[in-house]
Structure formats: C-alpha cells, structure tokens
Picture 1 (cartoon, rainbow, N blue to C red):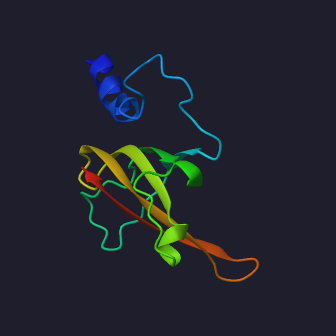
Picture 2 (cartoon, rainbow, N blue to C red):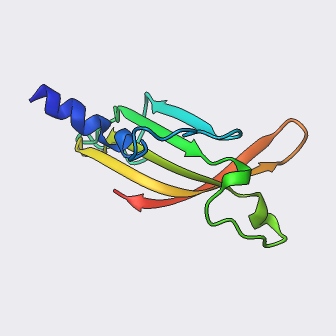
Length: 126
C-alpha cells in the first residue's frame, strides 16, 4: 500500500519525462527546471475541518526562448511570455490528495530597478 502512495505522488513528475528513454538533449540551452514546495497555509475563512498542511510538491519546466512551442510574433508584450509545463501533487483544503498537470505562460515585469514581479496563467487537469 505504501508503494502505491509513493507511485501516486511521483506520477505527475514521471509524466514530464520523455517517452523515449534514449532521447538525447532533453534540456536545451536556456531551459529552466524549477522545484517548489509549500510549508504553511492560512485560510482566509478558517474552519476547523480545513487542512493547513498541503504538502505541496511542484515541478515546472520553462522552455528556452528559442525553443518555445506555439511561438508566434505579435510585436507586443505577448512576445515576452515564457512557456511552461508543470505538475504538482498536494493535499487540498479538505485533506484529499490532488494532482495538477498543466501548461501555461509567465510574464516577468520589472516595476522598478529593484522590484520585479510576474504574472503566471496556467490551465490543466486537476
């Protein structure tokens, strides 16, 4: 039973691996792989049955600017979008194990010389 749990947690990350195990050049110059986790949650309308320990594990892959899929030239801010793909596993507010596999874009924005922010929009299967 424990092996099943481990497999279920690792399944989203295994989906990011190439189908052909002999594939060369999985990563190209400029690609980025980001690992994220989350250790604490505070619900705005806290209720006793809400889970505040999500145990989030997230892996995101950012395509290099030269190799971005579905790349078009718009001649505006959309040309600066970074394409991404990712997968996450976590426990939702009602303590149910959840998996999110997604794709999307990220727009980095420099507000001032020392202040940067970004907007990320994703869509996928939950």
